[in-house]
Image (cartoon, rainbow, N blue to C red):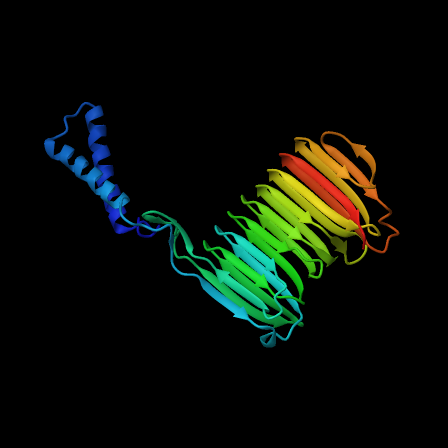
Length: 310
């Protein structure tokens, strides 16, 4: 059973001996006399455990695996990224590297000394398929981290899901053509640095964990583009600059906590400790606009929205 969960032989043997020693102690506590041989067994178990624990065990196991392609190998100008992991982290970077189409890296397996976190058989997979003119990169891992780096000049959509692990998205360049961004975690944090001149949908959701959105320039692709950010338990920080010709409808709520705000040029229609409604321009008539919905169950909520030149 220990081998199935990734515990090495030496440590599992020591655990068995220690368990036997604990049983000896329990028998003594219950009023039975432990024999000299039982006590000797417990001492040997402690010596074996100490020897195993002091051995040279590393904190990672396995090897990284990389998949990559150059622009000459990719016929599509539109890339959709699908990333899913149960226990690992996900990192997605949009770079200015014109000689790169994509690079996908599966990291090493996370492990402790004398214990590798392998629940059953580990699995990972990567596929790249073109459908209706869109190159779909699909990376899935049970325990390993996933790092995806994309080159310059592509229209990019992102769909990332992590069960227990963080998600990081970095597209810190307004020349990036980032369209749909969907990221959700069960118990990890989400950190998104997103600059885009053509955003069509943004959804960030965390069950238990903090969410941070940072954007020096965020412009919608059209009218009433939705931005939805929420976490059940954790902080939410939203720091966004939008062009001054873009309208915004903003709604925010906090179940158990306060709302901190700095809204440049907004008209505030409701502001309490738990609710906020504000608007910038008229989203019904503006040619480009955002509809923002921010919510926190338990935790802090900080909102900073400013306007910049188009």
